[in-house]
Image 1 (spheres, helix red, strand yellow):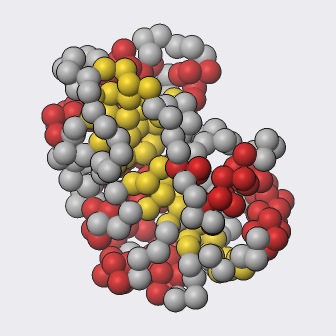
Image 2: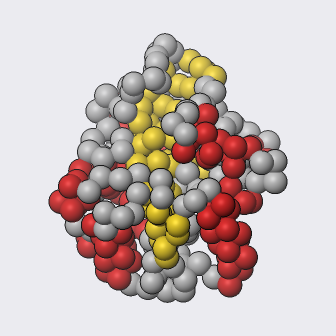
Length: 269
């Protein structure tokens, strides 16, 4: 990996992000990785403008990977303007998390390309050094960044060699009823959330049930639900989920993927 692009397909970066981005660029430069920035990295930009920037970086053969630095609410505004044929022809690693769940799953639905649920800014936000170490090993072809430990809550199943869809629960549901929702049949559905108390998580799970998600998938993977777990709210996410699934469905939980600064990466698609 010699040259990468920074984009913001959701909410644009602000003045508060400048120091983090400068530190991240310096870190990558120390790894001999050149960084180029989207013209839409900061402030507001239309969905089309942000999509045009992303399309450009896919087409540019000098770009080895694309890292989205954003989160928020606006990522699904780019979906109609992405050149999915171009993305198929120029498949390269695309990293993003949170609201980028919409883009990552849409890319898979439209192209079958795999993307990576991961926030690159955590390399400099994590003061333990774990993220930097994992990322350096990823560059060397090792799997530490993706080595997620799962605890089976019920049923029997395997995660290795299975296709995983999903991501942030609220953002994934933006795709419901659109052509950008991936086919859920025989997939594992990963769900996580930063915000949301019992009432919010309950309504998300109800909607997933009402669109038939739990009847189609082979199993459910639960990441971290930050607010729920920090406040130790009851019922738990798993207890809420049990209302909608049978007792034999495979369900596994990890504390290693979500919105934490030490979150590991997950391949989607």
